[in-house]
Image 1 (cartoon, rainbow over the protein chains, first blue to last red):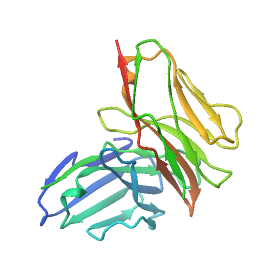
Image 2: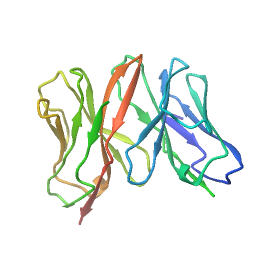
Image 3: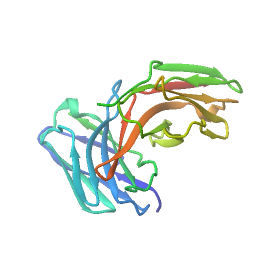
Amino acid sequence: ETGVTQTPRHLVMGMTNKKSLKCEQHLGHNAMYWYKQSAKKPLELMFVYSLEERVENNSVPSRFSPECPNSSHLFLHLHTLQPEDSALYLCASSQVAGNTEAFFGQGTRLTVV
Amino acid sequence: AQTVTQSQPEMSVQEAETVTLSCTYDTSESDYYLFWYKQPPSRQMILVIRQEAYKQQNATENRFSVNFQKAAKSFSLKISDSQLGDAAMYFCAYGRLRGGSEKLVFGKGTKLTVNP
């Protein structure tokens, strides 16, 4: 496989559930990102990991918990979400200081019921 | 904080004709990058074109070109000879390396419809 792969593609969960989103990149990049895409709003940067360290956390509620075990994998752990958290969650990767653009996965469409 | 504004929520164009999508941004930085991304119904964001702020020459990629006006903080995308496959959401994005990572700020997007 090449590129950035996200699983699952679709997820429906109740407000009391715990689930995780997974992102994997096969591009040899060393920075990974979580973005939230809601209808009629700009893409919101949630978390940035650079060289496996979290370098940015944009005031994201604690019900979202990221994990980056290595430079190829990124997780977003979800618990006690709210209906307004329903959105498309996009993962991206890039090469730090490599002057390259970010490459995106196809996203996970999350619905909280 | 940097902001990116796309003032056209929707645009349409006839197949084979030319369309221009607008983007303005606000920053106090002098060194940065600008991007146009395309998001088709498959949802995957695909880079269309990028421009380094220090370059005066406008970037071009086949049928896609930009009009970069640094002083006006304007970065429009021109699509020539539009094709049905160009129909998608187009996002303008601002980025710079900070703290060892590239941070992208996106506009709200413009939905482009291509009419046969």
